[in-house]
Image 1: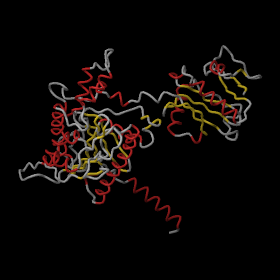
Image 2 (image 1 turned 120 degrees about the vertical axis):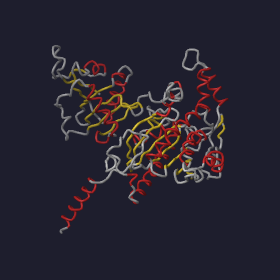
Image 3 (image 1 turned 180 degrees about the horizontal axis):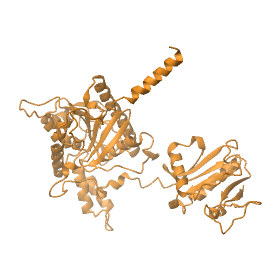
Image 4 (image 1 turned 135 degrees about the horizontal axis):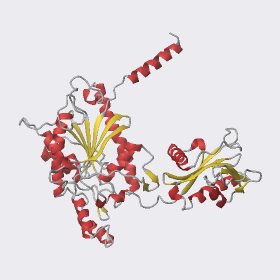
Length: 504
């Protein structure tokens, strides 16, 4: 076989291999801790100081919270009930549908460990009465997975528990004897937060740690997939394929026995830090921080013991199957055990309130515009330009006529205005500003940037093609006038385009 044919055969075989490849995956769950004693303090403080009302005393609320909070609290009385109900839901589900061992990655903070203890106890208990099932759970306490701000009392960082304390006080009494410990900066013999020097972790530090944990998490899951693939294990099989024995099973049955059990990993953590990790799950890297020190404007909210279900296919590929479910807290007498997932629980803090409202102007060659900026600029043009401008008489659609620049005005990652400028012809096109930003000088900033760049490029004038529908009044305010020899506007036809110029 000649080399060319050999290469063609390999390419064809490679394509066929991928076409027939099973989509192996792991069932992943993120679970927020049960209501902590600090959560209960917040609830009490909100009521006591009438937060959110005209009579609210914010300073009094903050002082009360700092005086009554703990650096590493356990769960409240309601939290204990939530943890019991979580175990009642998870134990039969994992027994019937998850392969062994079920993998648990748990924050080192007391409230997360206490939340999952009833589940671990139920899973490690041998129903035959012969002892404990040590192979039923693989438990890891991960020192990176703590809540944002860390472990502190007022302005003093606290070390947190070390591995011996976590084992003796929490894990060993429920039958978990072989837990592993990861991410303890100063080693397992020291508290998981003993490395901290600042009073509390800052938001940028939390974002950086979330990127580290997300990277670790995907590597951890990739290793599980690799091991099961090498062993040809069925618990990471293609869950989308029905095999003999599966025909009568209902995919939405979350409790009943399954013929083939699934590789399952459960991450027990904290509402805000889970939110930061989920942003990476959804968008990857680079989009969680809009500006230095300012987190992204969106957030994922979880109730106490809220469950988010993911499916992991390897190499950073996720499906979000469901988010913030609490089926275990559904109660015939009402949802009296559901806490921690409303605006009154303080979730508004996760949405930045400052730092995103100042407009910034950026000028970039059109072929170098970042994808997320280009996508927004295209959407603005399609939504808010009355119609596409006609093919230019001045060469803007001619690829040989000069470099095309894109000028954008942004607030954080959000594009609120954009325009295009041809460096050779001086033609300005596709000028558009979000309607909600049209009275905030965004258009002025956009055109000022265009003019300044044109001056620096030694242009004598810039030109636009406009009409009554597409910004004639705006351009007049920006210093443009009808060009000599150009078509004069026709009042009876507001859609008619004509040339306007601005002398520089």
